[in-house]
Image (cartoon, rainbow, N blue to C red):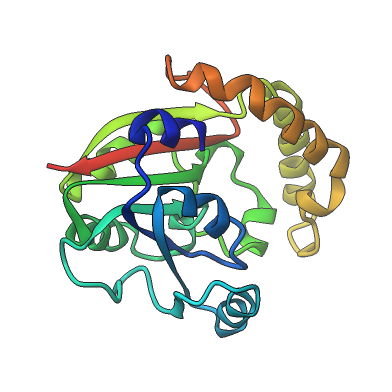
Length: 219
C-alpha cells in the first residue's frame, strides 16, 4: 500500500475495483482511496465478503469485468493474474475499464520460483519483470513502475524452493506439497521485513525478489 499511497497522494474519492478480491483482505485497506467494489469467481468468497459488511462485491470474471468502460480510477489485482488462462485478456479488460488517467496496480509471483505448490494453488504461471512489462504494453497499458519485492527474504526462500523442485523431480506423483503449509516461521519473517522494503520501493526498483509489483496507466 505504501507504493499506492506515494502515487495517489491524498486521493479519497476514487472509484476502486479489486479484481479477484477473495475473502476481502484488501477491501478495507483500499477503502482509504474511495468507494471500493470487488469481484471474485467464487460464490462462497463473495458471500463471505458480504457477511463481513462489504456489500459491493459480486461474482464475476477478470476476463469479462462487469463494469462500464472508462469508469474505474483504480483497479487492483493482488496475486490474481497468474490464476487465469488468458492473462492478456485480463489486462485488456482492465485497460478498458480504467478512466483516462486511471491506474492498474498488480502483484504477481516471480517465474523462477514456480514449483509444485503453484500447481496446487491453481497458478497458471509466474512472471519476470521483463515479461510483465511486455504483457502490460501489449495490452495497451503504460508500465510506470515494475519492481520485484520481498527481496530481503529471497536468499532464504530460494534454497527452500530449489529443494522442493529436487523432491518433485524424484516424486512426480506427490501432489500434497505446499510451502505455505510448511513454513509458518518464514511467513512471520516475511511480514516483519515488508515495512523495511516499502520505503525503498517508492524510490528505486529492486532487481530480484519473491514477487513482482507493477503499476500501469492507459496509453
